[in-house]
Image (tube, rainbow, N blue to C red; front, side):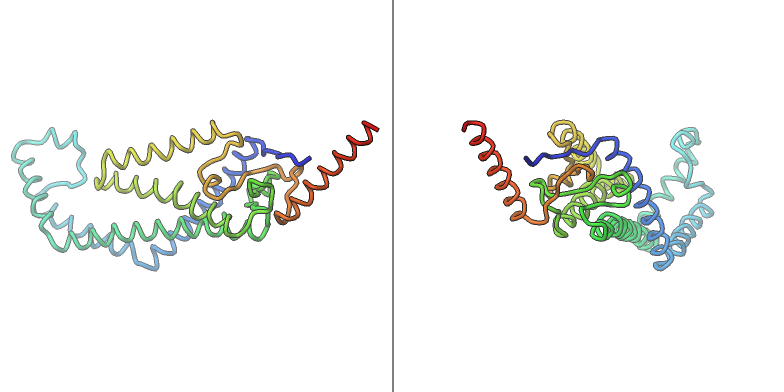
Length: 255
């Protein structure tokens, strides 16, 4: 009969680590190329020059820590407050800051998406059976949860919608917004919910199924021992043959 051959967890972890490094290399390379194309450094230097103007005018250091700020005299603290109020109303600073934030979001989004598109979607389509470079090396692959070969649509749902969007981009954007002070407890709650959901699914589900596999209806299996069928019809035909063989064996034993 047809059996599900679950991939060893250590193989899955090893493959994930290898793929994580590959994705990281692609993301860093794409991010560097986009930063050069959009002249990120030049925009950042212009923003820094605006800050330098206020540092020079008020005789302050904007990179000062909270501890050092608390040790300042009341006169110096007032200078910081005056400079901060004036910078908030500075149209040029606000415009250049918005450019930097938008570039960071744009470069981050496209870098991560292209990294996943290449390593988690295009490469598996080339190797077939949902194998990334890491999965290929460690002898594991991806199939539909019913035992049929994974389709390009499912690989897209798994890699781009699941891994890239839900498990990577959303947490990254939440972290960026937390750092920028755009969101507080709500962002932390979203981040915690995603992490907790991933942990619960890996522990509670029978096949240790993470979010991306739930979304795409796929499972990770051992390629050396797993039977993967090209179509539902082929799987049905196999089950029928197995059933007929069982019936024939039962008849022979009772005759």
